[in-house]
Length: 135
Image 1: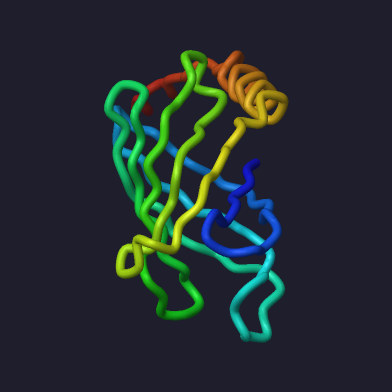
Image 2: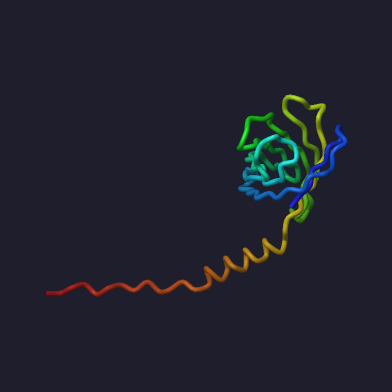
């Protein structure tokens, strides 16, 4: 769950949800946010994310999927427990238009998913071999 704010415009902060994956420092995922700026008949905007994490520094690019737009660049810092990312964003072709963001991991949902995964893998049925047909 997160929020981004505009520094250069008098607009209210925008809440968003993100599903991100970090595989050995390669970040990918998507965001979902209310449509607060695009004159399309869409309530929700979805964007793809691709980037990197090096230690506690993250950098990713966001591209909206329903329309052509400037790429949005994010630079931030992850806390030591990997539950919070804070930083700045800017448009790739208009870096003067920028703001801040914060992204907080939903630890309850993560805990539920870990428990669900453990339960699913806790019981593995035995593999039974069929006796060979002997005529």
